[in-house]
Length: 157
Ligand code: FES
Image (spheres, rainbow, N blue to C red):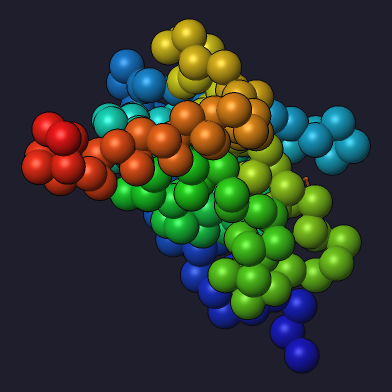
């Protein structure tokens, strides 16, 4: 059996979304101290949607394939969905990575989170609160929904 799936080879040879973005909404750069590889993600965000995403990866083939696949998976998605992307999901979308190469996909998950955190920091949004809303936030949200689902008639009474 081949060591790398066809998808890994495809994304390694023809990486999608490679490059950088001018005036990005957020940038995230992470590295792996053991292998020394570095991944940088650029985001263009509008109304909490990832309108554009690019990457620069100085690393192994699996890291390049992971960056390419990860950017494809979250392009056009809401930030909340992008934050849920795990390295396992990236590896699965690539039809698997050898066990000793799984850490390469971790870089993609971390770089995306770092870029979103940078966007939140630039806009004064509390990243932890966005990631882990407190119960009071959830109730507030539910209340808003209840109120907005009321019809004009009912509100007038
Ligand atoms: Fe370093 Fe793959 S060997 S990211």
